[in-house]
Image (tube, rainbow, N blue to C red; front, side, top):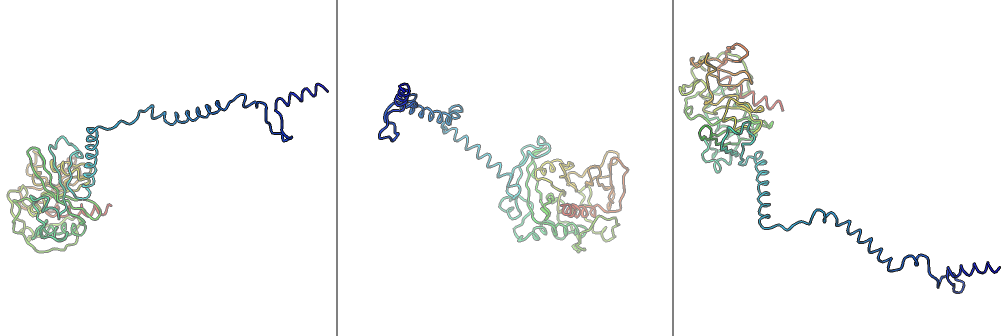
Length: 361
């Protein structure tokens, strides 16, 4: 009995005394408070907060705080942003018809030195390109622009190409390209954008071919496909004389455009103007400019190539004849003599590249 009372007394000392049997401890140390004083508890809380803050700011301490920019550094950043803005503006200007600079997109940029390339819509020509060979001051529509470019009177054998462009044309721009090879030379081109999005370009008119007496009679304006036919005697009489051309029979075409071709990219135009025989990813001259009318080879110096058929075959004509026919020359095959006149070939080519590109979209 005495031992039991002794155990109870020790238990009372452990839990403390109670007041009024409520069981609320009013005395005696608690085990938790024996191990942790209030001061130690506060220190533990502050330690946890310090650990959290240290974890949050550790990356900044490792990477270093951003340094304040000096005025020189601010100016340098501004220059970089302006360069990027100009590059982006030039990229979009190509599609909008504003002045652009090109060169890096050429197949062989090393061959084109000090390249300057501008592109303007026809209504901007008067203010932006005062030295343009075309004047559109009196034009109020694309139809007026096309009539100004193709000049009246237009040879009846070119009416098909004119009608095809008139039917499919959506936009007309003028390109000005300054090249320094082999000497500084400025080239102007018309860039036709068709309703399909395809683009056809034509060189500026050859001055020596302007002012020829041509028959203004109209033909059927429906687009024609390539055909094989002989010319009438009246058509033979209408062919103007232009002794300065290697092929005088093509004078009616060169008074409109000094060559015609297709463009898959505007960046290809400077290189094509430099090397008309080239083909760059599908962009090429199909009717060569007058400066590229050359003899086929040393064995056949009488044949002058004037057009491209494909990457192997070219169209030629006999310069010894006043009214030659087309001769097809392919290195892998024999010459093929055709009964089509060169000017008819040119007209059919314009119809085909305009119509074929539109149909292929």
